[in-house]
Image (tube, rainbow, N blue to C red; front, top):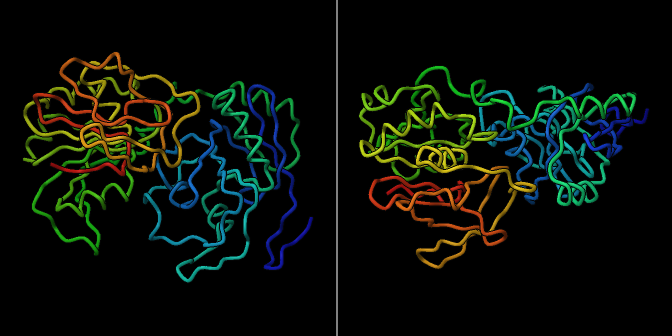
Length: 354
């Protein structure tokens, strides 16, 4: 086993095994162990800490396509959530053991070890990305140490599928809480935010527009929400397929016409389902920067996204207007109801309370 200049042990072999038999060899740089999940690629140029701590990454083994990861280290202010990271594994071409940022309080390998996240460096992320683009996201096993390749492939085949798993129930808050940060003053608008895995950046964006925020569990009843007398209700981002949250969608539907509702990411899809629409699985997901057209203004924005499912355009009601579309594949990125105060966007970047 080799050692880096700062004392970290490196050189333990690691392996990513996909359900279709494709394998990628690397070096373990995180927690020593094994984890199953769905292998996906994330094309963002920056923000590895935000990706790792995003609850929307629950159940995923994320491959970062930027070749050099970790030199800025980790700090608590940039975490997207206070809960334990739900990501199942991390894949990189090269991880830096040296931290070169004044804000850092620990290195990435220290963070990965502390949160028991299996991670591999020296992975051919370009080849992996091409494979996923051609064949779609795959159930996978990420492991460090000596394992039988055939055994790992079989474990990948036996792993649960993302669309069969309910991640939200283990992520959402257990009771209503008021959210605030020292940098944010109390706003004039009271928002009730359904927590499907809400990111701190979403809450900050809402607060910056003059919102006082109350976060509630996913099973909160419509009547309990109305008793809080909110100015608006927000359905947050989150992991997995919104189609699994049919009971929540039915409860949300009872709020229509009684309070303005805004959906973001998973909340965007869930709001569409509550209006009668259906979702489908994207070929390889939108994870990273995506160009989005606002059809009302003709303006194009670059948005940050992290989702693997989308609304079926043909399933949207005639009372729904598509307001945003993805310029890469034409998928629905936002909509509004023509009569009721209901609107939604797939991207956090498009949040705009009205």
